[in-house]
Image 1 (cartoon, rainbow, N blue to C red):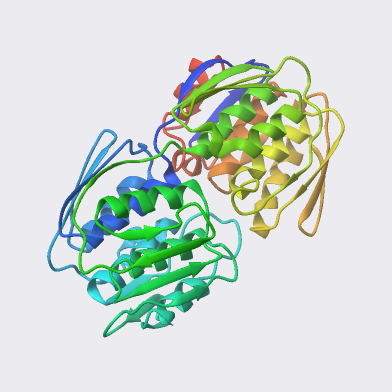
Image 2 (cartoon, rainbow, N blue to C red; image 1 turned 180 degrees about the vertical axis):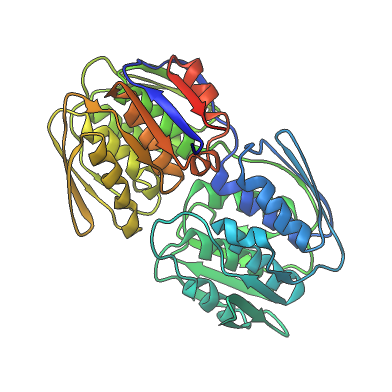
Length: 419
């Protein structure tokens, strides 16, 4: 019997939960350590499967990496290996973020095409086009992105879409280029701000973090630093949805609630009481059955595509009919097939899903297709009668440290079966 979670329905989640560093930030910060010779220390790292995978990628490039609890210590050599084609590259999407630092530092890179979640097409065209504008030659050869430049120079770069990954790779190459680079239509996510802060601590000259225009004045070299990862807003939002779906009362600590302004406003519309505690905590309380709410996924500060499974899960148990529109990753609606197994009344049409809420879901075996879908299925299981079995749980553990332990602390009956 394959390993899975067995989730007993009917629990009302109550209590406090601590959120650690952001998955979508820590892996990029680890890659940024490649830009400076010496030892960089990153704290508040989440203890998830992707962190040791990224550590393996960095080791294959010549770094020494020590992981101890929530601390990653990365010692980068004077001479880096420019080939990132280790087995670990195929296991996580974020591994492609070593491309920019390698081009910036080594002026050449061979980076295996990455793996990661099955949520749809995520081409690297914008990454490559940005590097070409900086003076690099870049092609796809034998399953790898190959980039090489005699010199990198500043450039005016317009992104067709505010891609987080493309913004990060271009930014990390540009910090060591000659002259000034302007990235227009850049991603604005808090994780982009986090990497800009770390790069500035390392000596980079960056203006406009958190806006759609990043201006980078290249410098000759960077120095190692110590940096604390920001709290994971996606994990924080997961617990907020859990409170509303189970008609619970959860205080979330360790994440800036202003990174979730739109999410929390949507939950207020669903009937939740939301209170903020400075820039480090918030509380979500739901007394009655939630009301239906429409959701549209968009780049930050819009509603994050990572939270789309939770929007659907909430809609399945809400009063009324919701429309969820997915504008970023077409394959995320695979989640709905599993929700239908649990008795959800949901239909898809292109990039729209219409969900009619039911009083209660029914238990069934379901399979996670990605990190957020897996967590969404667990939350749905809490709203079903009987016991729901969630398979492919390695996805969940790539993004949620101590997920089962936190659920139990909040009052859920969840167990791991078949280890």
